[in-house]
Length: 315
Image (cartoon, rainbow, N blue to C red):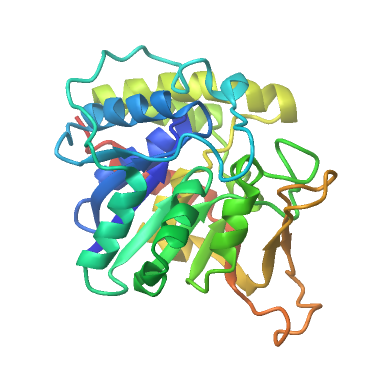
């Protein structure tokens, strides 16, 4: 069983990713959830994380509020995509559970120090502020991280918040730069792959027909979430970005990619937050080491089969 910490800014697609992890207890042990400002401000991402746990009836999983702003920049949010609450769709009751007092960054540090080296995987689903902050505050933890599997970035699909930048990286490019240069084994699930897992009408019906309350809630989330992407891209549905992280941990054989040198642009006004991936290996590995497993392809039908089978196990 793999121990994971989910670092997140829920978000409907974050919520589905969290539920997928919680519905897979034989493979994944979610030792904690840390929240970060991103899709909406920190108070809402934290509130949403608590609500998601109650949907799954997994109220013993601890939630820790993390950073409320990027390392060096003003917070950019995405209410235009996720709604004012970040989790628009079926209205959920106020959670009965509460967050833990410890800061999310300190929880990450403590967990990595107290567990054997390379036994915890970090799963960032939002801006990388908490992860980078932990590395800055406690450099000794870097060598203890088993791997980082994250949703973020883009290369062939370019940007979704600017012409060149994906949202999670753009919100805190300085944090992303620190993480990419950390030397930790990193797998990136970028827009290049998440744009292949669209919520078509047929797939939406599978959510609605799961036969549990969670399925109805998920269908309502996706119905709201897909409006923005359908209007923007003219696509048949919206990409479920963040569940790709958990699906990769559960069934990596569904995905294909390659190890590349990947750097984050932190200076240019034109391309701030761009994930510059040397996919074709045009630079020297000596000067530009291959630091990221960049996932480019996915078996979309296999992804949705896994997703619906696991989500059907929820209450």
